[in-house]
Structures are given as C-alpha cells and as structure tokens.
Amino acid sequence: MNATFMNYFIKTKCGLEKYDLLKSRKGVYAKIRFYWFVLFASIRDLGHKKRI
Image (cartoon, rainbow, N blue to C red; front, side, top):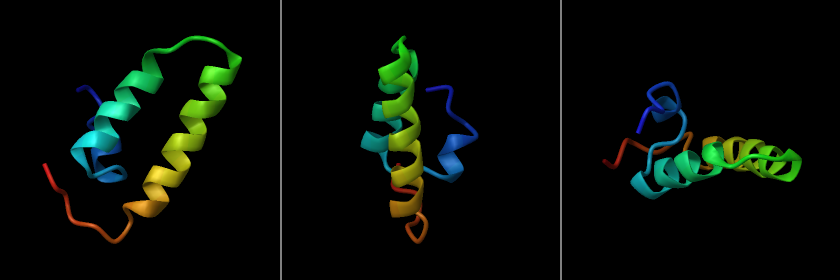
C-alpha cells in the first residue's frame, strides 16, 4: 500500500485496500467513484483510531 498520506484519513485495513483498488482503475466513472469513496471514508473515520 502506497497510501501513506491517506493513512491519516482512512484508518481501517479494508478501507485502505478499497482505496488502492479504486485508485488503480481508469475512466471517468472510476475517478468519480474514487473521489466519492475518499470523501465518505474520510468523514466516517474521522473519530476512529488506526486499526491496522
């Protein structure tokens, strides 16, 4: 996982795996889905401690 910056915002292992999967996809809809995921995963994990 090369999402070191995102480790601060997305803290669950499954969330970081999904981040890597969505980041690797190409296309307009894939980019929209990726940014949608990052936004809501970051909001959801704001108050959580890192669980890795």
